[in-house]
Length: 531
Image: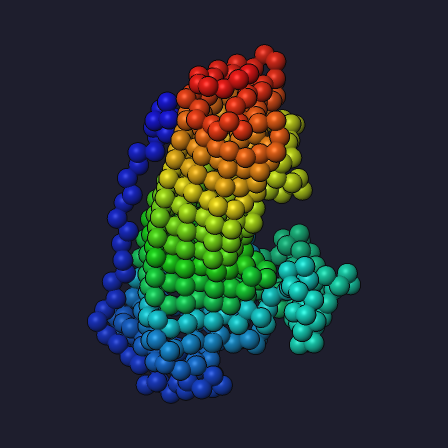
């Protein structure tokens, strides 16, 4: 039964092409650079990269030292190689960052040029064991609730300004006022970068922004302390990201680790993330802008990565209006993330998420849900809230289907598996195999269709092991578990639209033997349980 529901997951990952960099090298110090953390080396970087370009491409070697610079525009057939001990410190002076047309949070936007910036480039690499630091503290607002009182007081003493509600700290008054100015200019349809100069201090750059690029390699460095998102490839292809460390403070606003956005043919492997927002995230544009662009993120492999902190370990959405498909994530560990495997969207997004394979994932100390599908991401409901209202299905309705998860374990979390689906278009074609979870609650699904739960072991302290609401065509095969403070219910089914629920060969402990279902719902149980 499970194989029928995931039969469309037989796609093959294509080869991801690496960049080809000519065998030509220059040293940054050959162009007058000084690695004392004080000298401005922007000109030296530009001259070194220009020398490589004039030679048809090559490598700029950054030796150990503290190399202060403004933003860098990377060109084709270029490799930046930061040796161990090299720290590239990007300027904290706002005037060093010109405003450009870019993309942010799923829509075209005027932003400050990113410290590591490229557009339309091919064969680009950033390698070595050095560090690239985005100087994010000069840009980021900070929410009070994310800090201890001692940290908050220290932040206020450092300068900046606090909003009237005394809940958000801003580095400058211009940054705080820039939010309103930006919204007004956007509503007026202003598109010229010069129009946005008054709110430049609000327009925080991502640390790395590669747009419409091809054959990209990030191998070895640490990317840290970004003003907004850390690594953001957009509308690019043939990306290889390996052996990198991505770091942001836990309180970092928009402090995402890696956002693969409308990209195809990508491999992310053996990377470490410790960030202030989603860690490894798949995106493809937001709402009408994303649908009009119509570039899905597809053919992506993520393997052997570890996430120490983040809002989500692996995430799809919420900006997924161009679609996300054919993604394979395997052999990853999430420790202390807010949510482990996180899928999020909302009405208005549209887009299709499909053909996703997730296997051999290990999670511990998850603050929220181990696995979460939330199709009300823009809403205010809690994790257990049921939304019954149904709307017409249109191009604005997000679609999630054909998702396979297997060989997963989790210790610590709220729900082992939570689905908040749409009444008009339920989550469809999801299979979970060989999953062991020790969480407060077990499986809770609202509005799901064609679901398989096979070889599931749940150890909970509250509620039924599995609770299904308005769900159809569900196969539960070899469900086991223990715990719970209720009446020992193994399976609870609610909602008049629930239909064809089969529980086969349950292996539950004595504390979970009963099944409850609303009248008229077709629930079939084979095994030693009571009704």
